[in-house]
Amino acid sequence: MRNDAARNRGSGSRRNAADQVNEALELFPVQRCQTDTTEVRHPAVKDDYIVSSTRSSIKQVYDVISSFTEQKRDLVRSIGFGGILLFPPLKNINRRFAVWLMSRVDPLSQTIVVNNCKRIKFNKTDVEKVFGIPCHGKVVSDCNMPRKVIIPTVKKSYPGTDARENRSIKAAQEVVEKQCSGTMTDTEQDAFKVAFVIYLMSTLLAPGSKYDYVSLEYWGALVEPASIKDFDWCEYVLRKLLQAVVKLKNELQVGNKVSNITGCSVFLQILYLDSIDIGVMNMEHSSFPRIKHFAAEELKSMILADSLSRKPDNLDFEYGRSQICQPKRGGAKSKSG
Image (cartoon, rainbow, N blue to C red):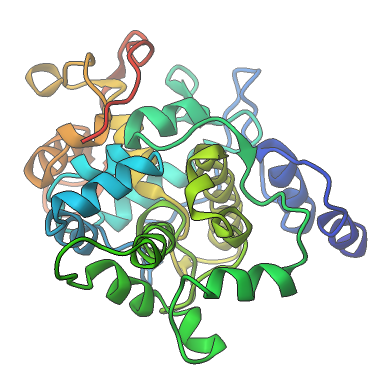
């Protein structure tokens, strides 16, 4: 079965998030939630499970974006990522909450299944509403060009003295933060656009498990910097998240240690907190992207409000206390910053 899946990956056929999750489930089978029945089963999440790390760096993302000049902000808008300019000052990821949420995602139906009565369905348009990034167009990982052509083409606008440096997150960050005197040249603008997407994917929207390592999977969408906006980045972010869910559930089933939280767990946190009823802390739902409303203190307070203490003398928490609100997430288009 592994060989068949590997052959399918190289076929170049168009596959959506569900297709790739099915493939991941074939390679790494996990216990699935029965979302069409009254039965809900989750991997056993032990009270003492250990989360080693996450490659997501949300505080750093805010620090980088908040330092942009107006010219750089215009370049971000030009590639369709204007919503990211409204990213709030967040400090870190609540890793225990992230694992709890991811362990309750049914990747096949794309549903957060808290229990038999609490379910939150989601799709790629919710990624758009949370972050304000492109949600339509060409599939990010579909490209007719072979990798041996893609990599040197992207390198023309992406700096680095060797292949290893070109796959460094730090190298991308250096380009993004580079101070330019006067108006940026066309070459500098292209370099910024490419490096910004690489940096954002690696630290927020689709972080992997390797330290300071950039995935090449989406580089085909960076060959023409002016066309970055023409790709469906929301579908890619969702696909990588669902693959991360499969990986995490598999790890929880075989032990109590999660090696790394990969995928965009921040999206799940915002989606969930924006969908539950926590009284006076409920957010209004008329403005987008949703992420702009969730600064560090608001996020912390909302997570605490949804927490259930296991024991009076125990500082560990379980989550899922709140009821689900009536659907409010449809409607307005994402606004750019």
